[in-house]
Amino acid sequence: MATVAQWIEGARIRTFPNAIAPVLAGTGAAAGLDGFDLPIAVLALAVSMFLIIGVNFANDYSDGIRGTDDDRVGPFRLVGSGAARPAAVRTAAWICFGLAAIAGLGVVFLSGQWWLLAIGALCIAGAWFYTGGKRPYGYAGFGELAVFVFFGLIAVLGTMYVQAGKISGFGIGAAVGVGALSSAVLVANNLRDIPSDRVTGKRTLAVMLGDRDTRTLYVTLALVPFLITVLIGLRNSWVLLGFAALLPLVVPLRAVITGAQGRALIPALRDTGLAMLIWAIITGGALAFG
Image 1 (tube, rainbow, N blue to C red):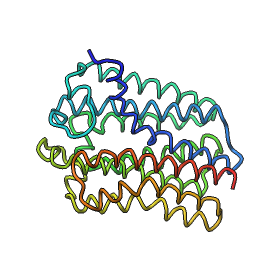
Image 2: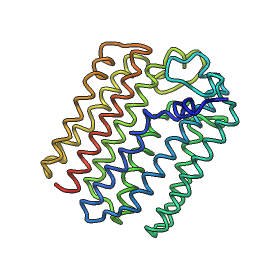
Image 3: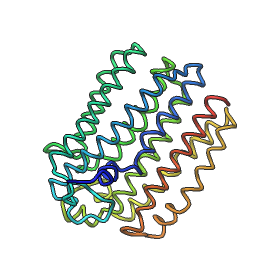
Image 4: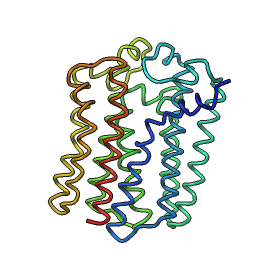
């Protein structure tokens, strides 16, 4: 039986910025249009948090039963370590998806945007089939694209739309920035796992691109938000404070550029997520009050 501490570790707390950042950015963009709605914002955050925990448990389950995590360099895994039964982890994933659906119903009810039920169903399907099912798209090199779409475009613009009732160019910029950094987190993760993923047949984008090009992709994605900062800064100078998010990126960028391998890349996930959270807080705040 897995302990409570092991279940918490299995939820992968370090990935939580991927869920929090888009809601902060989208809420800030909505507030900039005088559309801030606290109850909807809180429910949107609940949806995002339950989805990220659900997808983490789902990945733990699916990778575990496939044997992908048997010789893993990265953080603790419930199924791969044998600490929890696969069925229990799968159940935990679907409980989280169910809670996300309930919170999503609250968002739809308060906003009146009933068509978003289809988007919610798509998000849950995307979370499960990332590594689940017979042909998981995460094993075919589409993981980074999915993260960009779900935890970037959909999460930011969806949060903005359900509060303000419309989308702005600033919101699109924030969505691209958050999506790029969120994808960079996954790129760093998959860069670390290239050797083990090749052995187990998990064809991530990193495995397809190879070590050198994956490092180039990480650097590119990590710097995209700061191009967005410059562009939005032409209209809103407060957004330029977002360059502060470069500070936590110094260490992971150096690690990736200098060829760090294995466990030496684990901090890159944490620091990239921290940079994303800082960028979202500053950018969202600037869009709201600048």
